[in-house]
Length: 113
Image (cartoon, rainbow, N blue to C red):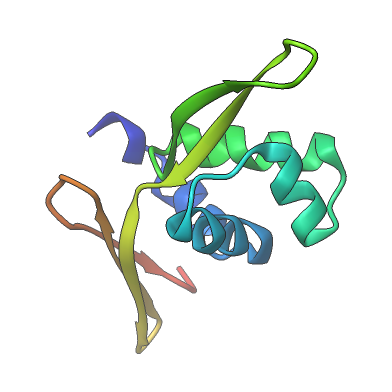
């Protein structure tokens, strides 16, 4: 599966506090990058970077495109993550990731190699 080729990077993405907040907020309703940046008090450039990162792993996707009152387009994003479970046992981190319409993906990683 292409999106999960770099499992270490995916693990880091899922452990990022703001990425988790973005996934949680967009699971409730589709939101724009501007709304997310304002809601979580992060710079707009950082919000765009986080959305791009989440999108590259298939964790979030564009659900709709709208127009502002002055005719500019903006996208509304929706989380694709149903849920994920993180466990740790004897030096092994295990993440079971459920993305909509896909079989669960299991990522296992030794903490100390």
